[in-house]
Length: 225
Image 1 (cartoon, one colour):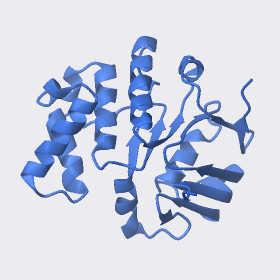
Image 2: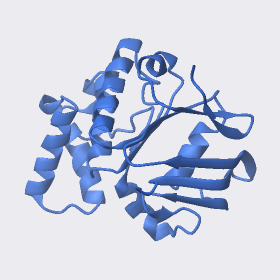
Image 3: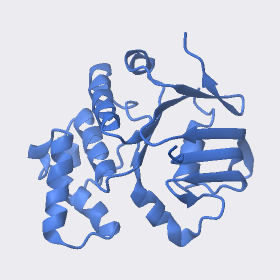
């Protein structure tokens, strides 16, 4: 049986010194897709930040894509993030450079050096998100949906085992939300694990995957009927 790519046991999650979630137990195996739901302020983003080591794990045990979150060294964080794809609600694209420049920046930052390899990888991920003709545009020249597609392309650059998507449809209209969800669904069907925080119940209804919920400081799986 395969090993989980994400495993949390008896974890407590803090923002500064404030307890956000306690008794968190979670497993996600290669290729699985889970929704993470809950009201604003319920702890979804804090959980996500703990998983990509923006918040330290200080109570309980946790591992993700082969890294021990409890004993993670500062110097190891970039290597952890190379194995993850992270998609943010607000895109986090750099407006002072082209789409190509945004993607090139990430590849340089994660150790790519060969120009030919960089060009091929950028062309590949732009093709995957169906924006091959947008490489020379600046982010502000694209629609919200196109910017989120570029953010997903960026998350795919290092062929991640797991994508953490934090409200990826939160800043776009309902029709575009479904297009973004179709893209994530296609990526998942190719074998990538996805944990997606969302408020978008139209997406959850259309794409039926297991759901976990943050509520009253706890995390539990939602049983669908």
